[in-house]
Length: 164
Image 1 (spheres, one colour):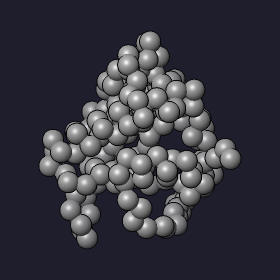
Image 2 (tube, rainbow, N blue to C red):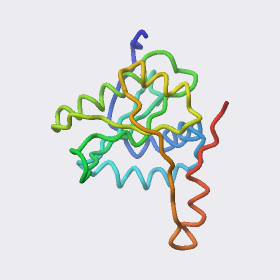
Image 3 (tube, rainbow, N blue to C red):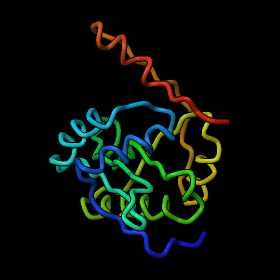
Image 4 (cartoon, rainbow, N blue to C red):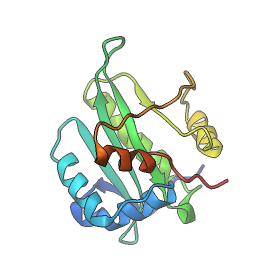
């Protein structure tokens, strides 16, 4: 895989919310730009989160959201919360560049492991991760329970509309 020339990896800004939302749509999740801007504003001030974008010719073409994840049963790790590259730019090494950035952050903060989860239907993404050295460690189900009416509406938003 050839890495893309002219791609800049930089921290996200709240002004990128529309582009982030558009790429989230490509993952099959719907979210309005203002909602994303509000969430980004909360995330970017946290030292235990890192949200980077890939930019080509002034346009955001990918992003990665990572966080430090603490567990009782294992050491802390960096967890990839989300990763997406615009479908028109896939295959150019941008996803690898974004993951390289998260892996470098993990080393910098003393985490020896990077973990990620991927919806079962995203088989091409699974091949990509394995190609980059990620090991499938388990298959699991994801559960959610609403604790109020707003949560009931949110449950539907957790299931992506994955293209076949």
